[in-house]
Length: 266
Length: 263
Figure 1: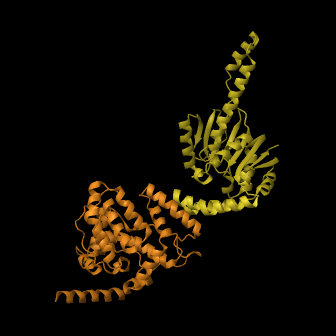
Figure 2: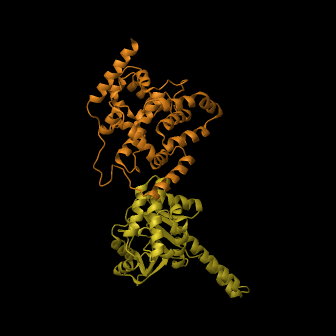
């Protein structure tokens, strides 16, 4: 009885999501470039950028712009696979057509904060507040030479914070590594794989133990078995209950909760 | 950043400019678009070492002075060594502030600072390096003030180069020397290809990785290509009224030092 009802609820939701009004579209008039902020680069430049940004990011992991550049210059194959996976999913396909963006300007914050506790929108706002981050700190894509793939990359970046909410992970080093492991398992982006391998090196022994014994395996397992998180139209699901969404996406709740990161935002 | 892009060679280029200048102690230098004062610091060090060399030579040749010579040396000691003065002028206040900090660390006395940008005539007579905010196209100095005018890697960024050259002519004393160190055109085809490849492939990447700014460094390499070549620039300097215009290529023409006199 329960499973029939929940399935019916899910179908109703899907219908609702696919038929609501269009959201902010990706701009398309860009002075001859493929998209705003696009910088044409030769293969040599991309190779140099990949090496240079890799070194810079390793030396100073707080240089998010370098992590971003590394992701863009090494992620072509993974982006193609992600894009194809999105195309094969009806909701993902809608996202590729409508190109929604998660930015402070496109979110109705007052409406979202009035949502019931446990809803995606409310939990997302709580997460942003507790960890002192904002969705606008994500850099724009520059070095991807295909406009659709650039959008996929941008979507991946903007969904990252929502992923923290879905996985219940804070923005401290341990939480970030866990999310990176999930992303590495799901997207195959070389930058995520690199982050997942090198991130643990910066953890204290006790945290490393937590990672290797329970958090890590859970993150990898969830990443492999869950639905593609980029194919979820979050902007139309703010009212949905977070637990329901996790179930729908096949994401198990975390093995234990971690305290929020009230220090430096990531 | 300059060190990364030029592999440290920009220091050698600036040293070469000083050797071509060969300033004697007591000169007044205007370091236009001087930024953080690289040329001025070298100028002060060079004149100081020239002065010390003179003293050493005089001491060596003066081993057994007569009583008259000793009396003469007492009276001239009060006058002190000739004061070399350098004025760093730049449109960017922040660069001047950084330069001033470097001067203080190195213990170079500061003549005066004008970080306000008003026009006024130079009448201060203290030694050392001074810092003035100003536009190379409209210098805040009276005419016939300086013995040497230099502009190192700055004239390329000036909107009206002819105006900057005319201003240089105006503020120089008669007999004064104009020196310009700037990126120029490479003559040999092989070096030109390597240089182009390096400029367009590597420099913007360095800009992105080190400074997080691709576009400014892309602009940098493009502005270098747009600047007139050695001969054309020589013509422009002659147009402004200078005589005895010469140029010397550095590193195969990647840079050139143009020298001229106000006669």
